[in-house]
Image (cartoon, rainbow, N blue to C red; front, side, top):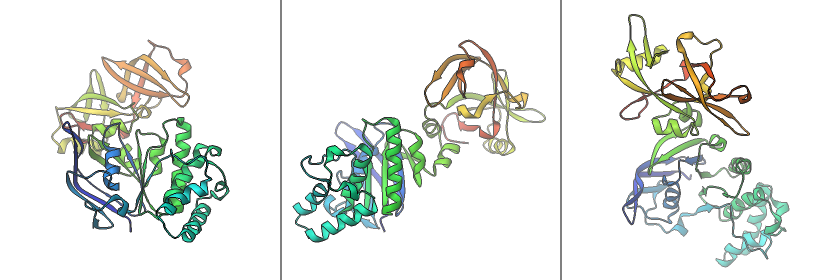
Length: 365
């Protein structure tokens, strides 16, 4: 077993910096957990607390059910895996991998047998006779895990990949980690900065914000059912629109009033709004670009007349930033070339995808 449990853990740094704020969470045995959140939200500090490189100011950390607060980092048997290995350039990969165990005067015969076995498992046997400058960034990633695996750690902690990589290379590096996880069948925690494609690779994803875990679960759960405004925005990769609306009711329907536009609601959302006593109150609508479409078959009652304010393009995707009665939102398009700034168009909201948030607390309704 290699499960990890944190109970009400806090960490303060000099100057009144609260890096970890009363955090509780459980990391399952043999799980690949993705730890994500903006810069300075506490991800690296959390990994260092688990590894024993930092001491909590309060709370408890358990590994395999054992309290480890007062156990030295060298005795926790946890590996911190960095893509930048700081390998000795004059040594082969095999020599680099055996250097640490040899320095600690471990049984060198067993160590060498272990290196060979791990290299075969991770499919890097062909790299053992090479020197570090002969490896590409992906081979280095595998070697990083292989070198850590020599001592059979209970947990692998990965604090991002090289910042020098392109987004395409980072994606492939994370895919390598997924493959390594399947081979090692170990508990692995990977910290990354943003909601990019690699977030989907984990068994679960934990979103950190200001030293706390705001939500933890499967990627689809966090994306489709965020617990609050922060998670909705973060998992939307910066393109989630937050729009104020008033919940109204007439003789027939409950609907959202956005300026002069009316947006209908599904029965389940109507029930939630009534039970929460939101009729005639302001709420926040969280809309993703892919859930706002050009009005080509949606009910006219859910359509919005808007004007193109700006056009945002990249190699992967393009967005139209729209404005309607002072309300700004974003829609995704596959062909931005047919639009220009100032164009008027009609878009419609997919009511099955609307996310409703409490205006005061930001929590999901």
